[in-house]
Each structure stands twice: as structure tokens, then as C-alpha cells.
Image 1 (tube, rainbow, N blue to C red):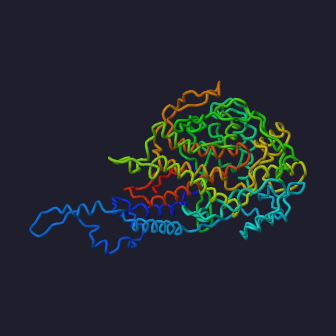
Image 2: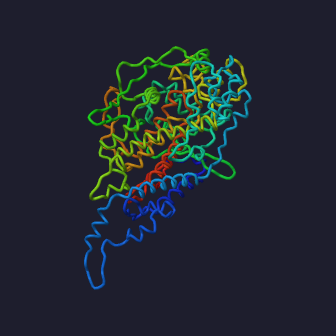
Image 3: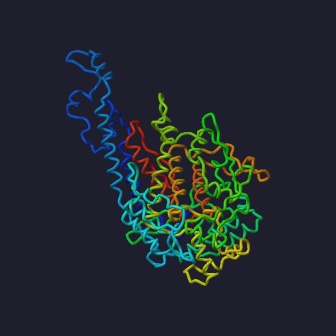
Amino acid sequence: MQVDPNSHQGSEQDTQANSEIEKLKQPRVNSKRFFGSHASRRSFLGRAGLFSAASLVAGVFGSPFSSKKGEDVVQAQDINRRYNRPFNYNSFVDEAYRVRVEAARVERSIPIPPHPTNGDEERYANKIGSDSRGLPHNGLGEVKLEAYNSLTKALTTQNPNDYENIILGGGRKLVNPQGPLAISLEGINAAQIAVPPPPALASAERAAEAVELYWQALLRDVPLSKLQNNTDNPKVLAAVEDLNNLSAFRGPKQNGRVTPQTLFRGSVNYVNLYTSGITTKYVIPPGVLDGPYISQFLLRTIPWGTQSVSPLIRTALPGNDFLLDFQEWLTIQNGGSSGKSINYDPKNRYIVTVRDLGEYAHIGGPTYLGASLILGSIGTPLNPGNPYVRSKTQVGSAATFAAGHLQALLNLGSSRVIRASYWQKFYVHRILRPEAFGGLVYNNIVNKTQYPINSEVFNSKALAQTFSTFGTYLLPQAYPEGAPIHSSYTGGAAANAGVNVTLLKAFFDENFVIPDPVVPDPNDPTKVIPYSGPPLTVGGELNKLATNYAIGRGHGGIHWRSDGSASLALGEEVAISLLRDERLGYNEIFNGFTFTKFDGSKVTV
């Protein structure tokens, strides 16, 4: 793992989570269950009198043998009564209630962190730093304030009727602004998860992210195999040089420099909480820089019972770029449709270009369920902490500690993390999308506006080459509709990647080396050939899978790097909270889920 040398290393939120984890971890050791309840679980319940005094008198905790004075007689009748009596339904139901109460207490005990924004919504009266797509705009693309106020009114009152009165500019509807207000019955509350404030509109970091996005658009039809240090591709080399000239680029580097091997690789942003404010810790997850750009989990057939899912995907043909014309761009900002669509290659293939990954992230697939099935098919051991790894008589099932259990959590995690991510989108940040930023750049050059864009954008080779290639200063989009109609930060798809990959690492042995790794055949993208290079581990390739998906949204032009980087950490936090709640209910002797976080630290839940 590499850490930005300028970032701070401490994290009070991580410390708080680890503290809670340790509290939950301790009582599980050497636990035993008696007549339908669990001794260690009872310790979680604050020793709340789950077993009555009468049950103790009845010998619940006593020896199965009874001695009379002067005799050594085994009381067979007592044994039969002890081990063959009916299940204690009332005790089981009462225990379920107390576990649920304890889970709620533990989650509620986590402090609410500060939620600072980048200040852009308050800073600009015309809301140029805020997401307003789907609302009506003037001829420059500035939102009509009556419409923006109707949105913020609904988000402030949270009255369902006010959402129905939001003024829209076209046929596209807002994506689920009330969803984040749903109360989850498991896991941490959205307001308890801190993310760093996103880069401000006028900042050098926002400019650096914009320059990277312009290069992602310019390199869409470049093979990913060219993103390596021995590349001869002039566009790749130009992108590397341009990004190295930026003052605040936060993407992966080697020895302080962007290289072809690090270009467009993923990163994760953690929040550091201090009494004086919030700072960001920038990290590269273990394994993300190792080996091929694309994760092994996107290159293998998914075995699904008696069926299988091919890793070959439908890809967009080269040159499918949209929102290049200002009027088309403005129509999309207003929530309209350009009437355009993607032209697809009739022949499916592996993910081999920047555009291919962008299209995969556009439509998606059984990505994380598929990864769980692939892990089983290649013989990946379960996480060493799984209690059934050591059991002489039992195996897990969909109830606990087997694939079905994990797959249920993957589905649950996807829903719960979207609530948390969308809460940041609608109720905290409301950050503009990259396509809207491209409109500000265009207007400054063409219409002589004075929007506060950092000069590094205008001085970049990326912008000049975009104009020479596409004839526009707008940010070319890979999707005709542009981005979904909700704000950019945090990224929902990346948050989903973060929660799912974390759950996968909790259930499988992340140190297992993937057998027979492959790469797409550069001469025939419908085939793969053996990969030869350093070993690829399950943990590293899962981290790569998460960052592939997050960066893939940027390849489409719809997300900033920081959107995905912060969301991966957010998703990880949601996963940890779900595992924490799950653990309270287990009967098995279990010392916790141990795995490596995106920042390279070990955690036990």
C-alpha cells in the first residue's frame, strides 16, 4: 500500500470503529450455548437476566450428573430430561429481542461526526458549484433559482408532498431523493459516517480531477494493455506528462510521479477527524497497482449452478461520444433527451479498452455475486476465522458462514450503502457533475464568462487536445444521457463496490493466490492468454475490482476521482457495521471477521 506523504495518518473514525469492534470481539471467545441461548451472546446483552432465577434453580447450568451421599449413581432419568426436553420457544424469542436492542444500542453509541462541505453552495449565489441537472436552466446553463429553491425546500422539510412540487426542466426525474431517509434496521446510520469534503470548484485539486477526466475521454479507445511502463502509446505518455505538471493530483503515483502503470488506477480517500477540522488521507489499496489493469474477477466465467455467465461483454464502438455540442449539453442539463443512442459492436469481447470498462460500469452485471461464485470455483479457502473451518462435524449453510449467507449480505449491503451514499449526495454536498463543470469551462472560453475555474485546466494539454480531437471544450461523455439525475458526491456505484468487496474479504481468505491468472489476448479480444508476473492474491484482486468499477464511472465521464475514492471507504464502513450487527446473533464460537481494509490496516469485527 502506498500513502500520500502529504496526508495525515490518524483517523478518529477508524479508532472509534475499532474500539467498538474490540468491545464486541472480546466476549465471543470460548462461548457455549445452553438450551437455545448463547452465553457469549448474553454477555453482549448487558447480562440482562435472560435466564430467570427459577431456571438456575432448575439446574440449567448444573452438571449433567448428580451424586447422592454414599452413592456414585448416574441419574439417567435426569440426563434424558436435560437433553431431550422441548425447545424453549419463549427464551429464544426473548433472546432475539435483546440481541436486536443491543445491536441498536451499539450503533447508536457511535458518535455523529462533523459533516463539513466545500462551501460552494453558499459561496455562489447562482449555484454554479452545485448539481442542478434535471432542473430548468438559462441559456448559459445556470439553474433557475426558483427551481433550485424548490429542490432545497423539499430536502429541508423532508415532507413527501414537497418532493412532488420540485420544478423539473424536462422528462427525467430525480433519482430517489427520499431513499436516504429510510431508517435501516441494521448497520450504521448515514449521519454517523464521515467523508472528506470534496474539492471546491475553484481548487487546484478539482482542476486536476477535471484534467484527468479529459484524458480519460481522450484515451477511451486506447487498449488498457498500453497502460504499462514500457508503453509506446503517445497519448498515454502525454497524459502522464500532463498529470505530472499538476499541483494537486491525488491519483496513484510511484516515487512521487504518475507513470503509465499508475495511470487511471484506483485510490481511496479516508477522512481524518480532528477537533480543528477534517483532512483527507489518500491511499492506494493493496494489490491495485499489481499486475494487469483489469481484475481477474472481470476476466473469468461465473459458474452459476448448472449455468454460467460469460465474462465477454457488449462493448460500444469507437467514437461513441456525446454532449459535444453545447445545445445537446444544455438539453441534457435541463433533463431532456438528445435522442441519441450508443452504437454497439455486434461481437462481444473481454474488457480491453478504457471505453469498455466505462461501458461495463455504465450497465453493470452480477459483479459481486459473480466474484463470490468465482471464489468458490477456484478453490479459495474460507476466511481462517470462519468457525466451520475448524469444525469436525459441521459445515455452514445459507443460515450462517457459507456462500448463501454471504450472498444475502451482498444484497442487503447494496441497499444500505446506497442509502448512506445518497444521503451525502442530497442532504450534505450536492456537488456538480463533471459534465456540468465542462459547461463552465466551455462558457469561460467561448462566452467569456468569468467562472472561478483554476487556471491549470486551461493550461493543460488535455483541454487543448480535446478541442483538436472533438472540436469542443465540453467534457465528452460516453453515455448519451450523461450522468444520473442526482449529485456527484458520493458515488453510489463506488459505494456499492466498497461494501460488497469488504464483505467478500470478510468471508474468504484474502491471502490466497489466484491460480492460473489470465489477460485478454492483445491479438484477439475474445480470448484470454496466461498472465505471467507477480502473484495475484484474492484480496488484491478484490480491491482492484472495487477500484475498476469506481474509476470505470469516470471513464464514462460521469464521476470525479474523489467521488469514487471517498465512496469506497464509505462502503467499507457500512460493511463493517453490518458485520458487527450480524455477529451479535451467532451461536457459533467465533472470534470475529478479520480482513484487510483498503488502507492496508487489519481489522477484526
